[in-house]
Amino acid sequence: MSEKKDVVRIGVVGYSSGKFDETIAKALLGIAFEIVESEHPAENYELVSGLTDSGIPGIAYKLADKMSWKTIGLSAKEAKEYDCYDVDEEIIVGDKFGDESEAFIDYIDCLVRVGGGPQSLNEVVMADDKNKSVYEFDLPREEEE
Picture 1 (cartoon, one colour):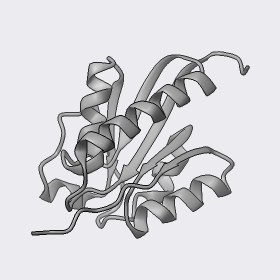
Picture 2: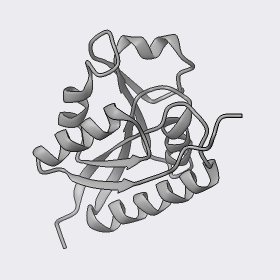
Picture 3: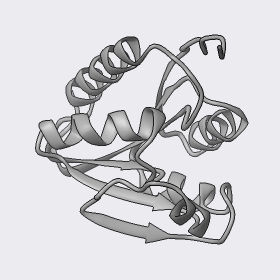
Picture 4: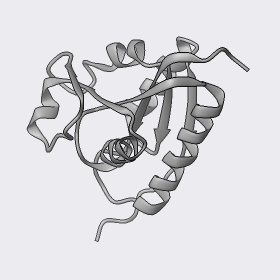
């Protein structure tokens, strides 16, 4: 068992849009957070995601608030064109989505992926390359009606 840290920053990536089963997504995030807490003991946890209040990031922020974790939005300026979650701290890096990926990976201690597209998968590779713990969950998209 590793020594208890002061803060563990949990990065969360996944679908920001499209249809998926939100009940399953909440359950997967809950499982991921339990695993992170058991494998990365800390006094405090901070949830770091892409600032928007939609899809997986929005669900993750709401769960973090229920757990009294600090919420951090680390994204590109482009996120401001969408509904943003009322995070505790905002960090803007670059202009377009993807510009912030390297800063995001450097900032977090571990990464949780629930579904997601090319940027999420790229950030998993980047986290893995930097020997960060990665917890991945596939989540199928539902057909658009």
